[in-house]
Length: 428
Ligand SMILES: *[C@@H]1O[C@H](CO)[C@@H](O)[C@H](O)[C@H]1NC(C)=O
Ligand SMILES: *[C@@H]1O[C@H](CO)[C@@H](O)[C@H](O)[C@H]1NC(C)=O
Ligand SMILES: *[C@@H]1O[C@H](CO)[C@@H](O)[C@H](O)[C@H]1NC(C)=O
Image (tube, rainbow, N blue to C red):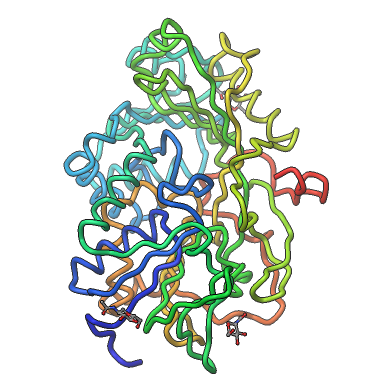
């Protein structure tokens, strides 16, 4: 492969955490002709890098992500400190031998971190008196380091940095990609939905759950919708939950945040196996798993009944006093799942001129301050062998449909992946 030159034109498709952090890092490294395309202006309304909060944790069962999370943490407490809230992070489980929790404990400790373990989770009330959850019969692991970030504002900040660094943006229908434009096995640009096209020396695909629409990654990544719900609290209710940590129940996958200061909005979501779709890609004609391309996937506020019930059950368990409360807003957040929860950051094995940076698998956002650096190292072929192998994009196997094997990194809980039926899909 010919080396990539600084004045080569680069198109980045997708203005989420992968695309923006990559565009910024590449411009810092001297690339001068970078254009980010997206269906929407960032923060992209139906993307998975938006809304009021994302968990920031350094507890990882995998050494590379544990290391990256510690590096990212430095970014959260420095450049991104205005968007980061150190509430503390609590993992709960109904068994002491939850394998993910055990491994995470081991790694955090081996890296010199501090973790508190409670055989009776009720003891976390000695640290957070305002926790309302019924914690009987649960085990808890607590890390005082960690909490949550305001996703929208962090992305706004990142997009502004890109803007100031001279990155071009084309958004809306004129920035919506229909398909990759090819010449033989070389990707030479993108066809736009309006009929026009843009040429580039390099195309970087950071389209998250939408990726299969543009290139066949069905052997390596698939989309899963994860339920999210928001509740508007009164100022008094919000005050009652002040100084509570981010909590995840590893047994159900449901997690919750303390109310957002100022707006008093409470958020719950499930980090589970999610809900799948089946749709035909306009670009490739293949049956794929992806959210819709046109319009916003957040607008309808539709959740399948079982998703809503799962979240409601979580609400009852975490916030018994709020159990009957209506959602002010709900949506499916679209993860890009991969077999082992590893990202996919690699030059495409067959299509020259195409680089893929996707596969967040529901845990990439926290790396926002450092992700671009890791992606750019892979792009420039300077990353270590072990990292390149971990994030490698394998050659697609013809006809492979492996969504049932996208199990993530072992941190998920709750019911198995369910494919939405046609009626449910029509409501998305
Ligand atoms: C950026 O690249 C595009 C596509 O190759 C080219 O048309 C354009 O002139 C370049 N812009 C600059 C400022 O070099
Ligand atoms: C992209 O546009 C070109 C020119 O119109 C067309 O030949 C090509 O088939 C398009 N590619 C796809 C994948 O639709
Ligand atoms: C956590 O999950 C377990 C197992 O489903 C459940 O019994 C418990 O009530 C849940 N607790 C909380 C606080 O989510």
